[in-house]
Amino acid sequence: MKQKITLVLTVLLTLLSVMGGMPRRVFATEPPYVQSIAAMIPRPHLGYGIHVAPHTSVDLGWVERLGMDWVKVYTDTEAGYYRNQKVLYRYDLIWPGDGNWDGLKSGVRARALKLVDLGVEAVEVHNEPNLQMEWPRGPNAWEYTQLLRIVYTEIKAVAPHLIVVSGGLAPTITTPSRDAITDVDFAREMFENGAGNYFDAFGYHPYGYNAPPEDAPNARTLNFRRTELMRELMLEYDLGSKPMWLTEFGWLRDPAEEGLNCLASDLSFAGFSWMKVSGQTQADYIARAFDFADKNWAWAGPMFLWNLNWSMLGPGVLSQCNHMRWFSILRSDGQPTLALYSVAAMPRRPVREIAEMTLVALDDMAVEIGYSCPAIIEVGQFQVRNTGYPGTGFDAKIEPALSLSGPEVTVSPALATSDDVVTVYADTTGLTPGMYVIFINVETDIGGAIVSQNIRGYVVVSETFAACQ
Image (tube, rainbow, N blue to C red):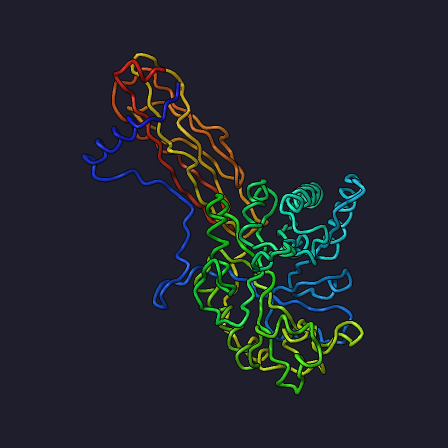
């Protein structure tokens, strides 16, 4: 009986022009990607994190002195070190070529329980799967999505509060050999295969390469703000309620400042030479990148600088000119660089780790029915989303507002948890022709504060018999 046709919108436009305006639908709001300095800065949202390499003699106190509230680690031993920080664990996996999916599933469950015991708050599922060096079978978004689906499902079965972050994609351009796939294309294929259902936060690696962090993005440029192209893609696939975690970023310091001619001594450095900047520039760009994300990317979650101490790994592990050393903000002898001082001195605002409720209409929330065929009809659906910190949640009471002259309205469910979809029904029995505006009230308790919002729907009772079809 439900018909959402042009006539409904025509009636709405005509009546609302008399009533004084269009109906206001409630959507998840996205601030502009770039705000003027005078614009209101978004609520505190950005976590400050850094990568720490295992198996070095690094002074662990640097993480505390740098004011980091997150740390990204690679081993169980490391995970136990940082009791004053939240821990993101990089969880590398191998596609089960033998087809032993049951073994993979049981292994994931055991790993999740172990990480919870170690105090880990979040897991990043693999690393840069759009590169062959990280996905040896050759980058394949469908394969990665299947792996992500299984890992997410198994983790949530035993540790539902563990935050699952999709493997951070490398910002890159597709190569002729396809050993690298453009990040935007790879993510689109992930979303087409349903990946958006299997992460709490989307992981991305917005390296700055050799450009300032404020440089504008475009499809042909690799820079820090390429992140915004990925966010646009998330919005296209209705994933705006999920945050992006920037799980690696940084700038490469020029080895020549320490007397090394890496182009002459290490041919592997040649592919990274174009990225190098001075130590002072590295220091400036890192601090400006944190500041830019804080002011302009309200949807960004924790942001992890790459890296503290890869410079301190032994020569048997990394050559002196290996590019990973020159992203470090400690020198090979453990002494600070200009970038370390810059990061330590950055102003920052602590994140609010609470849920936030946003009501999102999933359709027009408008329905037409004929006067001569009264019935209980579906008006539409909306989602009660948590647009706050991942891993948090709430229960919301859903109640139609009482109306003396409108239809009787019911909802299902009447009690929703965050991210549930609510269906709205209206009984048109006894209604005369006309348009009826209905309101659905949604109320929850978040952090001891009562949060109330409402969303509108429209029922048009038509005199035409055709509206019964």
